[in-house]
Amino acid sequence: MTIACPDCGTIQDLPPLPPGAIAICRGCEDRLERTAGRSLDAALACAAATLVLLFPANLLPFLGARIAGSSIETRLGSGVIVLWQQGWPLLALLIGAFAVLLPFLHFGLLTLTLATLRVGRRPAWLGAAFRWAILLMQWAMPDVFLIACAIGYSRVAVYVPVQILPGGWCFLATAFLSMITHATLDRRSVWRAIAAERRIPGGEAAISCTVCDLLLPSSAEGNRCPRCRNRVFARKPDSLIRTAALVAAGYVLYAPSMIYPMTTLIVFGEVQGTTIYSGIEQLIHAHLWILAIVIFAASIAIPLLKLAGLSWFLLSVVRRWRGALVARTKLHRFIDRIGRWSCIDPFTLVVFSPLMRVGDVVVAHAGNAALPFLTVVIVTMAASRFFDPRLMWDAAEAPR
Image (cartoon, rainbow, N blue to C red; front, side, top):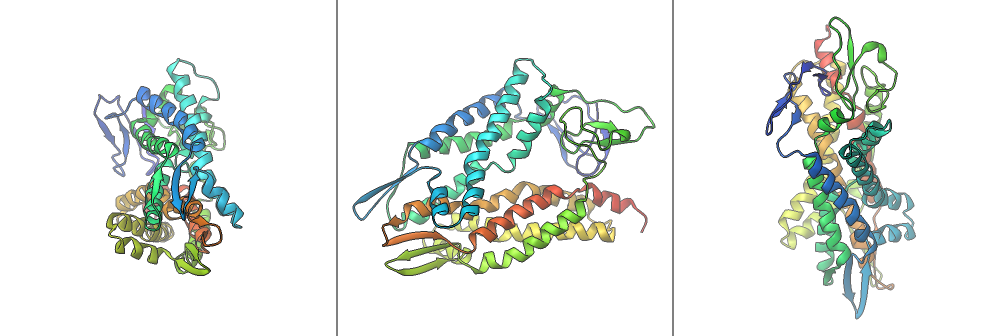
């Protein structure tokens, strides 16, 4: 079968792989296919189990604490409700979507797609359903929320004893199963099961679908892909303009997200603001070095790396740089995969806010940095998706 690499556009033949093999792109060294540890049946079982566990994880009591003789129980969505009541509706909607709503949609579509293939059916909507399941994989974040829960748990435990309740244990299992699902899912095998790759006659120009990598004749540009129903273009439309606008917005919002507090704790009327930097210092003073390193990497290093890397990519296309082409392509893949982990710090608000509430004596609020920082994460994730790395290869091959 013949495919085009989604990162460099190199058209190459991909033979059937034996178990435990890896196919590497001869252009950008991307992993085109990997059979080691991949199984459609295992992915279906884990996806279905994750979907089932999401219900008790959201409905059962999540965490419990005892403050000043009164008991507090929270659920997974309690922090979202608290943020809404505190006057942060947009922040509450975004966190609620990433942590609660989108995991249901993602694993529901994934389970439906894999189960339909398992029973041997190929309905017309199957490719579009799997396309949306893959798209939502980046934005459904139970694994990221798990790390945020661990950090929020550690911060609250400094003040009051915290107990993990049945909903919390169900969510713990859900997050681990979600990671196993993604690790065992072989996307190319699923696409191949939906519809086989096709060979373009020799001498005819070809373009590739950016979602399922199906090779199509250039005359199909602007039409729907017959396999995933995505609209097909030779290169992503307006890629440079969209990426540049989102990166510029990311730079503007990054400064206030570092300066203003991420959380505000009011204790007996005294306001204690905690910025990202001071939060890291608190974890270090509590000898939680691993969590401090995680927050530093996720909230400071990764956003800067994304903004600097995307700026480098844009400049390299405009200036038609030819050096470090493979390195730039690998960096883009890395940025695209790690961008979601910067949501850890805003997600800790969902754990921290509902537990740290004792009448008017102790109240935890989201700080003014929470929404700008989460917006930085979102716009850089979107910028990475809008940017077409094949443009760097086109620019390197174009005459100066």
